[in-house]
Length: 179
Image (cartoon, rainbow, N blue to C red):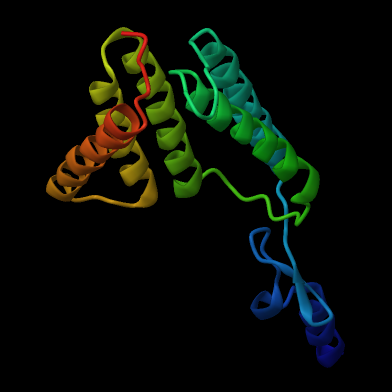
């Protein structure tokens, strides 16, 4: 009788060694099946929509400048090109990235927000202050988003990259600015 009671109590207790926690992937044969938490399946479409809106917004805003042509580029040519490329990339991402690996909000999403904020700051500064101020902020934001953490290294790279961009766009290509 005591043996039956012990066996029954053992059957009722879950095996904690093999218990599945919600953050662990489930095993389906030889492959791990990712666990998606409720609400996380909306992150990819939302992210793609935000990038598409930013790309279209940048392209529409840049059209207000002189776009010019490839042989005589105006101030709006490159922003129109990059904004359009961003919008197209977001749509391609939305259509073809179906891996089901939506994760929690973490460092990668924060880095993406830093990069987007630096792009928006570049646009505002370029329009109201000057190219140099906007380019410095853009370079710093992109470096931080890429993982750079040393302020001196970020500052030196920002100055050198901004100087190189200035020479390329305004001296060599002769791009005119609206300012």
